[in-house]
Image (cartoon, rainbow over the protein chains, first blue to last red):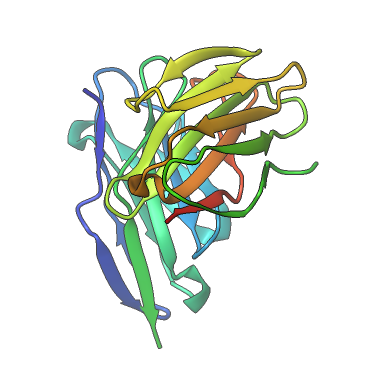
Length: 113
Length: 114
């Protein structure tokens, strides 16, 4: 069965430091992958997506992610974190039917000053 | 273009009652999906509708149902509410299949069952 694993439940990063959030997926074929961000009490906002092509994907707010098929990973990165980046981040993969997203459990990012 | 809207935003019900949540997709989007978000289980897929037909259903009891109207608006209904149904219910819309499209999420309806 398809699954998404986000190994880190909570990460704290100093403002201005770099960030990497890990995501591993389980899927037989070429996956369609997403990163979403959720601020407290809000819905999900799309940061970036990977469907095919270039394995380094650029998103909004200065985020990028790299698809590595050999490692079944789609890690999210940002070179310099801002206090406003504090939120919960979800990695997701499209199911085989192409009709639903399967989400990881999420990683909560805290930013310290 | 307006985003996905959900009403109501907050709801308090008691056990045994039923509830109906509404979702209006982005104009032109024909696929609407529903997800339940809880601290323990995370984000779980409920069901997906496309052109008024349910195409996919998650692993939830029959108390959870939904429908989609000809204008793509969707409603989900939960009957005989249980305490464990307390959650944030998120609606998402996309043009068609996720294989080639992106789902855009609404702000959610927060349901509290007492």
